[in-house]
Image 1: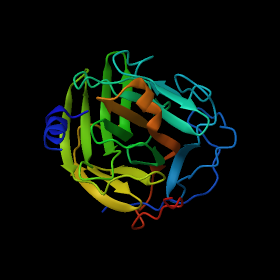
Image 2: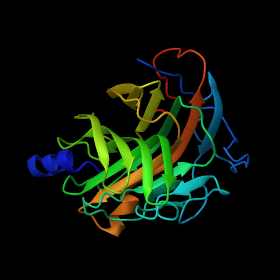
Image 3: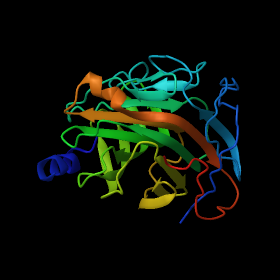
Image 4: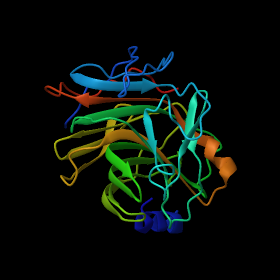
Length: 263
């Protein structure tokens, strides 16, 4: 959803935590999610949430545990699910940068982490498709604030990744850092952490981009999707097959170790 960098791309073509695959049925609202069977992040954590998107929902709710960018934020898209997949509901004009967005309910500690497994098929660099992790994000009417960690769903030379701060109103955002990422393949694991003012993105356990910002200290983990120059039919070509998020408490013990290997 970053207009200057996206335009360039279309024109031209450590604070770490251990992430383990263990079962978890907790949710911010205290409602269990049936048979999550997803990676959960446990060491040195407090609140956590894990799901493999077992339901067909538009927008995603999972017993009231998600806040959506369309239903609540009004100016953005919702996130929808079919069993085993979360994906977007809109095509963006770039502008508007009305990314499909959903974040978890409840009050979360400032230091947070999240990870997800990527679905990406029928890749086409002429269509800008992103999967996103959100941290410290708050969705209210006509406002989304917080941090987006996005990963472009291509494995060719157009691959890209950014960390962006959302400032509230639609189309109001600040690029914090960007890089040519390693590219994404179906089954790759993406992750993000925010500890203090340090924000880090990972692909398959390898840090790929880091930025610093202290604008927001509160908000929730979540997910997002962006489709520019595609069609609604393309939305199900890219998404997330599972998602886990947790608060970080205590010392950060080392390089992330991801419990879900890439396919």
